[in-house]
Amino acid sequence: MKNFVVKTIANAGALAVAVWLLDKITLTGDSTAKKAGTLIVVALIFGLVNWLVKPIMKVLTFPLFILTLGLITLVVNALMLLLTSWVCGKLNLSFHVQGFWTAVVGGLIISIVSWALHVVLPDED
Image (tube, one colour):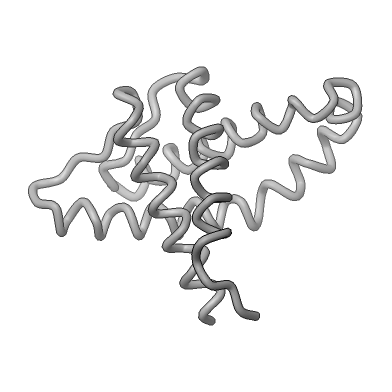
């Protein structure tokens, strides 16, 4: 359970950095507390999307992974971020990613920040 909480906090922090750095990834809300709550829910959705859909995408894109020497991972991460944005739109959450290339850069930022936070935060199974 502690590992789940740590990963969710890392995802929320990484998403917050992406929102802060990129104008076309938006998170709106009336107050800081509401934004933080929305960010936690978005992080949970992002984690669920990565847990359910990303393994399937990796299997389907395995030949492209070999052909592109792993660069297809950027596209897969972008698609996961766009799917998260779409799900958030269906749930009336105020998180939106505008455009594929914004999602590519956002996915890269989220990957780097998430990796750094996983190194810093405790991780116990």
